Image: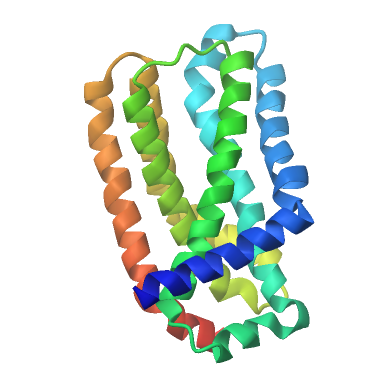
Length: 224
């Protein structure tokens, strides 16, 4: 119980910082909305193509936004040597990882709600397979947040972290992007049976990312 309580403490700390700074509300979420709007304007002449590409464009916007969220999550730890405070706090590295990943996941869920609403309106999407969509979104979001947290701490102490984080994260989350896009496409096409294998892939990736992050985050934090 102490492990989970510490994780909630870290998550609450990060979310309170975001609530007060409103960076996620004023920058990251609008950024995701602008990205899908630009895609809509670029492909507006071909509505069929726009409809088919909607799942991929949605997750591309989420991926670009998660890079901003990861950078933000660890840049605040560099201010006033807060990273040293985490090291000296006595909190287990796994609980710190779960807390930071949970905070990023909450921000992503909010982003996905806003971006999803924009996609439905602009791309003229009919919602089908709600259960599949929700399961895929949860698994993909957990996988993205966990993977981003691991690579974020690796690059957090480096001067080039703004460019290094995308180089590390983008190849690592390829299975998430593939599984999320394919599952969304199958669900929206009315083929939920074809979507579940992809949801299983996303779930397996999320479990692996969370497990690996919980074990490795403490040593990575000490060495970063």
